[in-house]
Image (cartoon, rainbow, N blue to C red; front, side):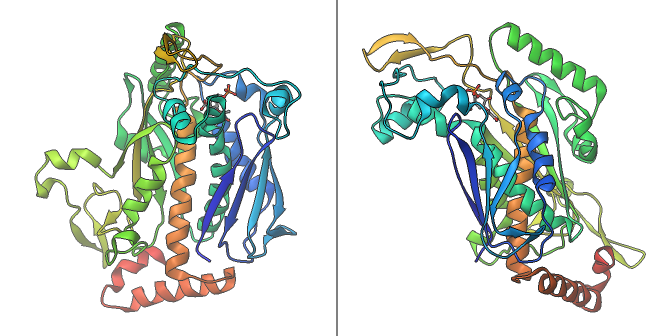
Length: 393
Ligand code: EPS
């Protein structure tokens, strides 16, 4: 079965759940592999009170035995500690007394269209699932994909290069992404980190929220993941879909992104050069993707996140129980979650790359997967484009 995953769970319900299918047997996997990324997702200057309550940790319910995957679906559960405070409002059982309905949809959230679509008269039924809490389950799935990719020397990192008006150089952020964990806002520069934190403080003071931009980089991908032969297999399109699906993302760029539209072709393409018998590129403006395939360069995907729509400075709305003008529902929220979104971006990129990797080298166990990968490497080494492959050796 193709690699894929599904999540279930409401933000203040008992747990977040994820089922990952299509993972080969024999991949070493322990809770620590997943918990590391779950903890990274919880960090970030500008988070609200919820992260003080939660301590996300995975429980394996299926698919893993004695530290190795079995090839069967991997079921993982992350408990919501906050459920203890919400049980009366979130119990799956018919409640003893009806919960108060929320009827003041927040502009920018899924609230209004969600109520219209699913015929709800209480927007809690929408916000619980549309909440970014769900992304903890995605990060768990991404942790499995990351572990698989690491076996083949593929490393995924991320960095933040904008929070509100505070910016850092995007290319430099991508280059230094491996060190971004050291920054409270995932920006690999002390001075820019301080400016971003000041920006968050100002927004919090103004009872507002901020978006930003982040970049995800995947180093060590072999050429030829994805394909040009069918629109469904184009890897850049799959990456865009996956990253755009993260809550509050409004734009995705590959490589230099929208900048390519402003430049001449000779300033955009990455020229092919020979260096000591190896095929190398003069630059990586196209973000490691040409014709919907990886080209062996670092894969670079960036995204723009809009500000969180739950803000203390409540915006205008209409009370759906009375049809009177009103102010939007307010709930505890983050001032900025851009650093967390970058970690979620890593997870989504990992899943898409692992899916493409398994599609190319497809095997149901790690031994055969290594054999298929090694055979591809040696074919490239011998073939007409052989010199390219020294990098993969
Ligand atoms: C969120 C609202 C906040 C965030 C939440 C996403 O939750 P609460 O309403 O419980 O304060 O903290 O994010 C998470 C819980 C998380 O783990 O990322 C929202 O409305 O999207």
